[in-house]
Image 1: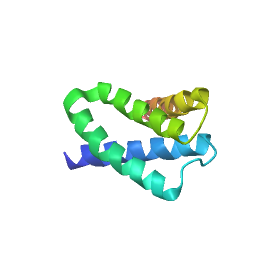
Image 2 (image 1 turned 60 degrees about the vertical axis):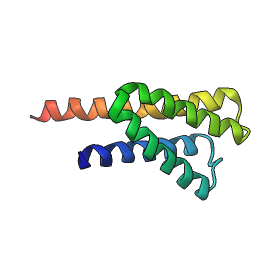
Image 3 (image 1 turned 30 degrees about the vertical axis):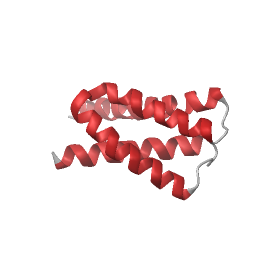
Image 4 (image 1 turned 90 degrees about the vertical axis):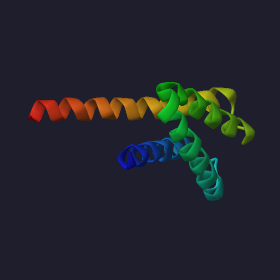
Length: 102
């Protein structure tokens, strides 16, 4: 269970950081910490209960935060989705490389 929580929190932190990088550091350090903590607490709880549908909460909350920071609608929707897509693709590539070397 501890491993599950650690992996979920680290993925959410990486998602928030990648979204911040894609939006050219629109969030301050305090906002980064606040959004990461909120997503880590509620996202992990939702992931344990409703599993992959918790992703809608995470992406929706990041979109709302970016829109509050006056980012365009296109970027507010695209950045969280692209951040998630990059994590999925990197996981897929790592699995392919591990199978290839084994």
